[in-house]
Length: 199
Image (cartoon, rainbow, N blue to C red; front, side, top):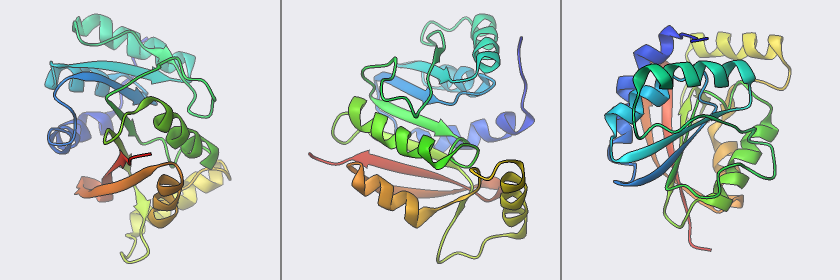
């Protein structure tokens, strides 16, 4: 059954604009936590030279992604695979890029650790790991709406919440990545690009 998220419709275009100069021209793009599947269809259509691989750990999400993909009928959109970022083995062995939208704050920190660990296994040197969502920054005042969102997330699950960007950058360095760019996005979100450093 198709799921629909209004926020996904709103942010697909702006995200695609910043992805354009960051993604490789060809290859496999693994999308972690694809959710409804709307992003996967939008980006597969927007970047026809890339093979888009959606994934999610949730069975209902996988069904929604499959329904969106079936209706879209795009040759470069692969069937979704079940993938929990925390798992030590992923069902995808290689990727030219990884995209993860709105997962880091709605999952335990262990999922973010697993995301960087898994990315380190399947990405080549210089390949991008792209994250999108709201973050806390030491040198930037957090808007009230993001503080309220953070409080609501933590009330729902004590392991959730907006992550501090400096902590994320530290994890990236320990995992063999370096942040190369920070894009300010609509609705007080950020797109962050981490690239795998030489081993």
